[in-house]
Length: 402
Image 1 (cartoon, rainbow, N blue to C red):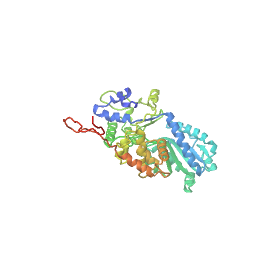
Image 2 (image 1 turned 30 degrees about the horizontal axis):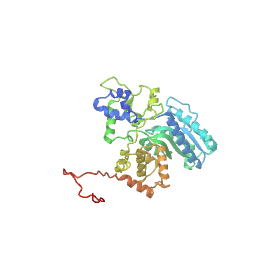
Image 3 (image 1 turned 90 degrees about the vertical axis):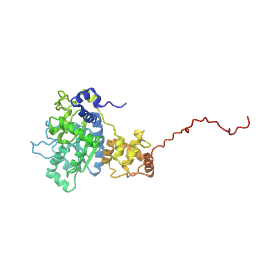
Image 4 (image 1 turned 180 degrees about the vertical axis):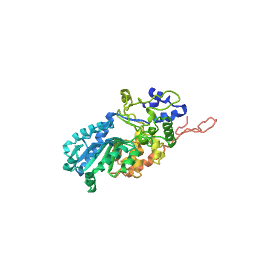
């Protein structure tokens, strides 16, 4: 059974009543595109990704994990500063710090993974990789400011000049805007994420639909600077029970000529209610496979031989993605709307079925299956010739005289 759309729930209908009739379709589109990641889903995904990154990075030497924290402009400091007191700007950093502690303990047997060490410990242990852990990169603003604090440390700059240390960023989700902004930073050597962050750009909308949603967000917003979320990040992702400020502000508060504003989320709060945590956990819009096929410039795949099988068509779309560069995880996750672990599972199946080789290039069998998938099943419909004349056989084969 398909999950009920948020716009069809009692809470969703009450929120949609804020809007004029002509604006309700766009508002419903926004509401139905929200992605909720449960606390368990978030922790499990982060732990697995952090372990994978650590195991790979340990080949270069010891590694240190740090949570990404908002910069305190009232305090003169540089990173690393693990003893910096937590303040009102810190939120999900408490959760990521706890996950860092748990993952570091599971990798304790390596003797080379450290949780939030001081600069002196980094030097003594000759740490070669700094892994910064975040929950969601939307605008990229928080992370780049945090990286700036690392760059302001003269020791870190010296180690970088001698190529002694690298920086990797691990986050549950990363938007296209955030990815672009962070990759420009001189310390961002690599970004790994579980899923491509839900935002307006990655939503399954046409350009006209996307512009309609933006228009509604702007016209009904009370706080215009947050109409599309903090720094206009246009995020649709909610991790755990925390409501980020990069969501469109009309989900909390707006101006309506129809009724006093009824927010989908409680006004003034950055938390889901216990009921919402239960009912919304893990909600995600399923991939529009026809739209994915068009994005891959291969629209025939959606109506081809495997169009009626979701699982088979998803594997076929992975093959279509691998048939053209760049074939990277980031690109495939983006165009296919898959999490990292979903993609890895599909790639493993494709390799096991000898459809791709070790370099992710299609084998002869893979190319043959892709060609077959593009073709349509021929429909043969037997028909009797149109005639009102009654048919009588003139002879009976194999029958002698009666």
